[in-house]
Image (cartoon, rainbow, N blue to C red):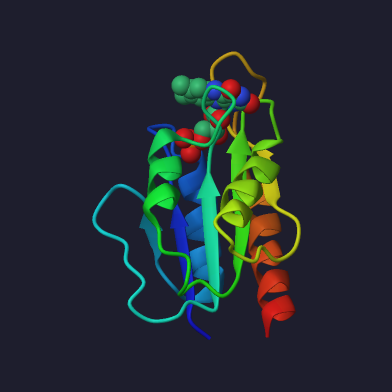
Length: 144
Ligand SMILES: Cc1cc2nc3c(=O)[nH]c(=O)nc-3n(C[C@H](O)[C@H](O)[C@H](O)COP(=O)(O)O)c2cc1C
């Protein structure tokens, strides 16, 4: 199965921690949207997509990436995200992909991310990382 993990993460690196945990659990690499080129030269059975939430939206870089993307090679996707207090980012990302015609499997995984003005200090923590790894394995089982 061709599995890819792509994500956007800002300086705080919260979503990157989830992306790397998923990548480790599945034995693939995590690719940062906007750093280096991401292309899909062969069909992707399962694309994990992650982001934080910035001013109540997925990041501009993520939105731009999906605006330009040809969805044809993406057979399935799953969503993960971190937030200050708006866990709706999971559903927002899911909708972004569905609006491109991409099949999104399962519910989004979301967890708190440390950010100014919240009590999220220390998140994602070890439990969050264990949970996201289990989420990834469950999604893979759904697609198999
Ligand atoms: C510029 C900026 C804007 C943010 N806006 C929101 C917001 O509208 N809603 C929210 O719940 N969290 C907001 N946050 C918190 C981030 O979504 C949270 O810290 C997330 O974990 C960031 O992920 P990252 O470290 O991977 O970039 C914001 C953070 C930053 C830096």
